[in-house]
Image (cartoon, rainbow, N blue to C red; front, side):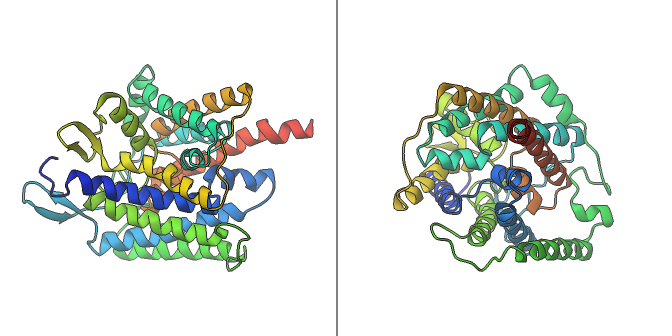
Length: 367
């Protein structure tokens, strides 16, 4: 994609900018999808889950609005001009979405954070989070490029079409079309807002962002990322951490992200993607927020916990690779497209999370 008019510097700066804003919002709002799902059954608290739902509602409406308005634009080298594109809805691979989502959900409990959670906690100085990021990358790479790749390819190859589409959205279950699409979005958004309203969303936090503020900002950043990844990154990918984490590490290790999506030749020195750079931006944004709140502190847990985190993060990576995404890639960005693949994966991420929460926390407490 060397012919793109978005030069190397602007590609890097926009990606870093989105990542920094995202990391700042995550840290200020203590926003972790693992915690949001876990707290439902562990302490019977829906606060962070409501923040997550609000972010989904904002992203769902916003992402589809900019798609239908023709604001998602990528550079077309054939015409040497920008052309409209669509949201990157994933193909529906039911076995992969179910198995991968479930494994990922279990892994995030052991790792102590989801894909976004471990990255923003790197910026707070948690050494366990550094270990989790490394394990996450290893799990992804082992699955996509290593000894688990035959299983990965087999599961990802089993796809189901709905209404003639291999990447169906929720509204395709009801026949599809613009009218059905927006009726479906309106109903889903209304249900979410009813649940959100029960959590007193107009409060004020003693420190950082109130949960509703965090949810609103993260939803808006998801929409911004859809636009920026298309316009400056050559591919509408939005926010995700599975592919971008692998791309960042592969770039650092080999000078080639080995991505099939929106890869640029930067300064004729290395090949990488727009998405790989916001992986750097997230902990930077979190660090800036933590410093301002005086919450940054180097923390290192004991060896047993580090080992649990490392193994859990490898399981996270395996699940994310098989399932086609993580909590942000599926549960926020993917769900914002209405993709059935992401909705199914998210359901099984929650079930995997609850399974591990039960065995790791609830069952020992009962005993």
